[in-house]
Length: 217
Image (cartoon, rainbow, N blue to C red; front, top):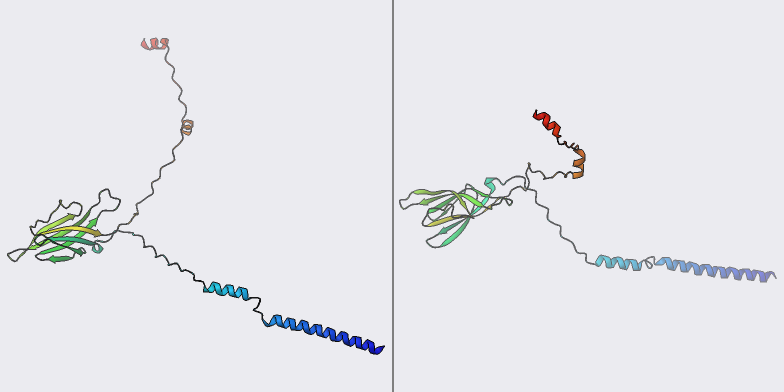
């Protein structure tokens, strides 16, 4: 009787040990590869990392606002010079105070000006001095004054051989000035409010005939 009980107990212990061993091996197998459950996410991460992401170029910074008119010395004028003998025209870029020589002609720029965009009449002018080398070997000033691109007939260089005219004047002007104010109009007052504020006038009755007669006497 005791031997059967001991055998049953031994069999139960062997069975429980086998179950525990099987459970432990299953747990170790699950823990052995901890990345197995994460493989779909890792594949997605790799696919996202390998995707090409377009890079947008940065917009260039806005230029600073213009606060004053370009100084005269920083302006650039382009003058056209024509040699009527050979029909060759040349362009020259000058700052005020600079000069250029074309054969027997020296052209000197003293100033240039261009009207603003909001002006009703657009003009581009240059104050030019022209010196011509004569046959006697001396230089003579033949012109000193303003020349205008839009009106070439106003001032003409008096030369039978050369012609000079302005083509452009590079300069900038501020869009607003210190005295610029926004134009605002006051709100109109309604007629009803005006009539309410103004006291009603009492009509003056016509004088009676008796009153006219008394004033006549």
